Amino acid sequence: MSTNTVDNKRKVTTARLLDMKQRGEKIAMLTAYDYSMAKLIDEAGIDVILVGDSASNVMAGNMTTLPMTLDQMIYHAKSVVKGTERALVVCDMPFGTYQGNPIEALASAIRIMKESHAEAVKMEGGAEIRESIERILSAGIPVMGHLGLTPQSINKFGTYAVRAKEEREAEKLIADARMLEEIGCFAIVLEKIPAALAARVSKEVSIPTIGIGAGNGTDGQVLVMHDMLGINKGFSPKFLRRYADLSTIINEAVGHYIDDVKSSDFPNENEQY
Image (tube, rainbow, N blue to C red; front, side, top):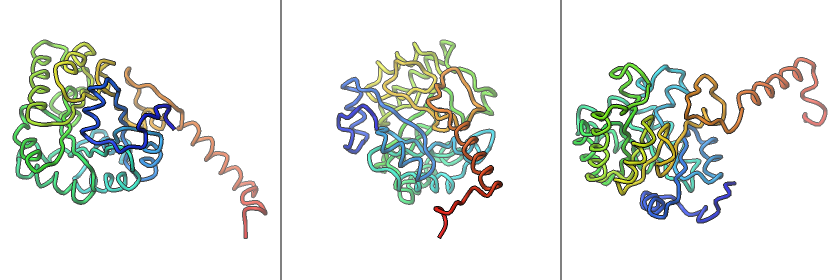
């Protein structure tokens, strides 16, 4: 259980996240994609669970997030919600469900909310998707923005390098952050941008910012659960801190099980009927 016992049992809402920012309490966010892991991290006291389209990478083995479908995201989100009592559950809107058509964007968001019971959606982009965000917000659906490195646009960028290092892109990011706040987003993920820029944005907007590879000046942090627990060892960016080595633990446990089965040690007399 987390050492942070203040209000640890109280349900996290979008309003509570704003209150946390105003009080200077950092927001802890992790991804989850299934019931069992969502239950574990919820019980540990995580504030926000992101049902990320990173499921495309860590669950389905794809190279990018682009292949994830709306049906797949709803499946993962529905499973996560069932395992969650305290955390706010946010579901990524997958590539192709909101970028070009605001009416389709609203229909996609409504499906996520009705079928998965998630409490908010997350969308990548700024001014270019403003109309889609506004359409979704008008239906009373909370939206978390996402600026900086936007993995759904990987084919446009051609690289996962740090974004907004140049002044022009940095100024656009600041303008986009202000726009997201103005139209009603409740928070913004800032991914892989210079720490000084992330800190500036966090001070200039009143809504919470959640960083990943964006330094310590944001209002919270998010990591992919499979990365921080050491389940996925093929991804080692500078910003990633591994809090466990589950890959080795699981490998050794399975190896021990195999040895016991092969040697007829398992099951023993106390493990049979």
